[in-house]
Image 1 (cartoon, rainbow, N blue to C red):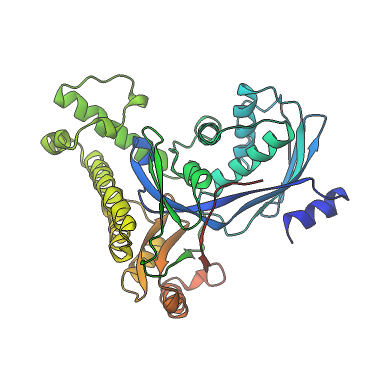
Image 2 (cartoon, one colour; image 1 turned 60 degrees about the vertical axis):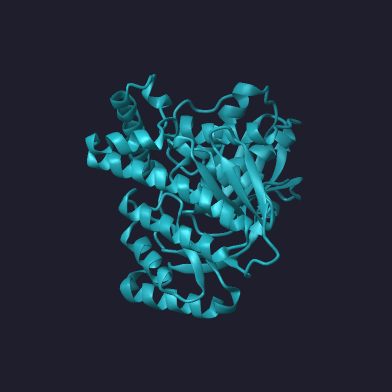
Length: 390
């Protein structure tokens, strides 16, 4: 059933609007945006749809095809504390929007996610899709940067996830058949077109069958470890530093890290090693894409995945297994965990002519290792896509 069908069944009328926000993949540039790094990424042609109609009384009433419980609140009376259910992301989005604009009109909506949850930034996608719909019924027009900032703040301030702006930026700025190359320090970005000479590729998504939530994972701790490394490095080098929460590795020159890294606790050093390595990989990856060198871009993506395991120290046993299979499978240019890397999925750039063999090999070897996940594991082919739209 689609969200439009569910809306008709529930409200006995047609929805007045349909909002869509794509999911995203980030082949190179993982775990760096919260430290003001650079990223590369795509929006994909799967994502979150919301069928909706305005409610003049200001009430927001939402249901989801993925979750059973319906959620309700008023645009001007969002609960101060999160309710620990799927709708917290949207309560946070309402709160952020109401703090900036005089909301009057609510909406009835049905939400549909087109892939399993985990690793493709479904949280950012549902927030952005919802915010576009809520803005539309209230006659508001946010520019792209404001939409990204508000969506990020909803996760940071209400849900309590210390994410950066990678997910939101990919889901708003992206353009079909282009690679997004974004500097999260100043929000400058480039959409690098796919070179006509580049080898053909598709985006494969391999779901481990294990779902995850960032708020309950070690994601926030990793962010704090990065900040701690940056704070300590500034102190050792005699650099000025202010509030802990406003400290980023981007402000610490690589030479300072090399000089003082042996003074850092091992975990802080490892997180910083990943950050500086990933910063370099992103710049090299953007240049490889610009030249149409998919083999080099893929190699750097595999390298990014390795760093996430060794230096960032994420990856459930399931995701590590999928990644390991991918690295020795013909027809896969490169890939890595998608998302935080604690559960969720892996993504890969693949040669379309190898698609059938790739999917069979990954599934057979993965389920031989984790037979209990048969029926939960799944794989999909996706393509690059434009960002959010009504």
